[in-house]
Length: 172
Image 1 (cartoon, rainbow, N blue to C red):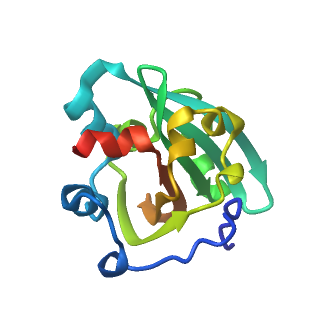
Image 2 (cartoon, rainbow, N blue to C red):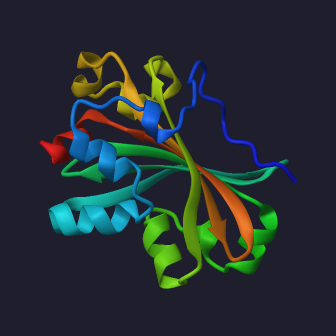
């Protein structure tokens, strides 16, 4: 069964060579397949927390939307679509709540990222309201996004991450 995330309008997905970033260290990090959660805990420690804003079964599997925060400032918005067979096999995956997906998968030693592509989000009204009200986002023309296929326990899951201005500041 094909996976299906909520669609972001007008994102042209590209390979990493066609990605343009102000900070080369940010671009290099984006192309890395390591866990965002591990990076954030190493970089800023306990200030990081996760908030699930939506999770539901749909005709394509299980869809989860979450925001990663640092000190009440949103860093990353993420959507993940899992095949229902995977949520049945990997107990706890559909009940993560406000816990980190990356940390859960690392604890279960069951995943890696592959087939990453990148794009730019220009229509911010596609993001959840709690991100849109953030003043920093109104100063941006575009946000960098990463689309990844995750291989988990022999299944493929789909992940889209939107990197918000506060996250990019970690690379200055």
